[in-house]
Image 1 (tube, rainbow, N blue to C red):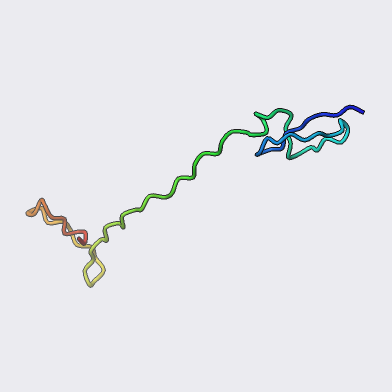
Image 2: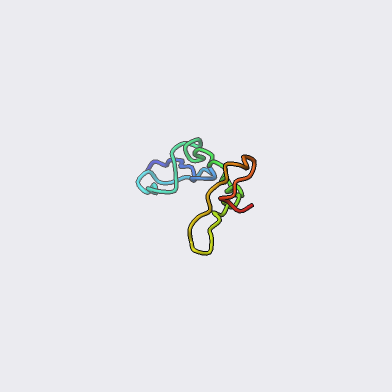
Length: 78
């Protein structure tokens, strides 16, 4: 019976198998295919700034921005 080399997926280590007993998964027929593409690095989530809180009055209605103070937005808490 003939024998074939198959390469373990992920490591590329060669193993010898009988031609009729080759595993269907976990092995590739070339070392490059066994090594596969490198996985992209996992990106960590960037720290997000907390959203500015809208300022509400006691009655539940929102405070409007005062046009007389262009450098301050009264509608949001600092």
